[in-house]
Length: 201
Image (cartoon, one colour):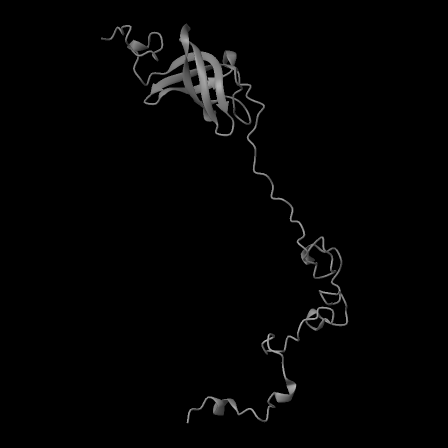
């Protein structure tokens, strides 16, 4: 049973029948693909322990196993040497270097970072300090200006009393849908005190 007949596991490396599953082996090959954003990929192993592997076997590689400086990644087709072991998930690399044990060269590609938030565009609101439309008061370069109407920019009145707005007086509490009849409005003398208005007979 240990000889491994023709119907055996096709993913076995040459001579691996005698080896335990956790034993560290050496191999070489090239990067099949590598996702620089996720930080992992696969190596196609063409040689194991100095013997050719045909067809090449896939060996999982994580960026933390790469021997190199800076951002760690692999370029597609890059030649590598590595140590690996068999786990419950398959073949996994333990240490990956370039040819001759040097550092990996890596990919020029880098993951795309988050885009900076777009600059706020004016929505028609004015700077409360100078009245400009292209910024707000906290971004205003002018010193504090005299208070003025936000509607017409006059310094003689505030927006509540602005004659250009045509709005009803803010002190009017009457329903604007009903015209006010000043002739029939009650005077303050006709209105009973609050204590009398709510008293029940």
